[in-house]
Length: 333
Image (tube, rainbow, N blue to C red):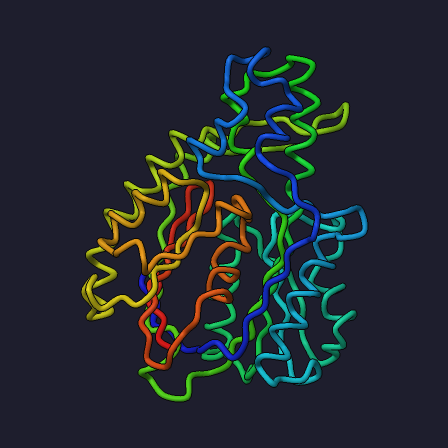
């Protein structure tokens, strides 16, 4: 689905918990060499992930989102009372009901904003951006705050327990050892002129692959499911490869025009394949997985926050989420 962009970014924020857990610490915890014949440095060497941030018990998803939102609002110059909508897009939640966006709205003082949640695995933030962008066209919204807070390392540590009890095969839940916690936020406003902001969105879903990555809560507590990293990565790159020519054509861009390539990141090899898919040089593609792991829906906004953008820079964004859902977007600063 091709959608013409209506918005631009007024401000971005990102927040990372201070606690660091290394990949070797995780692998040592499950006695990977003795129990599974896998070296303790496997996550470092094969996945390229050295460490990740882990939220403490007080850093709930809404807290991470709030801390990032405060930075985004400051950078945008938009006051909380000027926000028209708050959209929370994380997989993680403080509770089942009401929406986490309500807590963010209240704590920030966005008293004039409607609030709701959107969730779509790691792709959720891109869906939030798309909804915010269309609010610019379909309503009188002038400032929309899109936020996320991810604390999925609680899944990681639950599987540490299960693996120590040898309840499940390691390969089925490998992906849970790649995740990290983070918050991210973005303030979107209507375009000042057609040559800036989001130019086009290209979204696609192939739901027959939904079983490749799925999790649910067990009756006895904890989680059950699987995250088949090899199969997911293969299909994601394949789907992006099938879409990229259409995206470049609609944007009127060539690979050589790209100043920054921001893509979802789960590890070293998939990241390299995504760069090859877009035909973009490595120096134009920032890496976050090495120090932060797969930060779920926070990946795209956190990387945009950390990249120095110059006016007129062309940024290609490639979003990904289990399901499988993908998107490609063109953004001009």
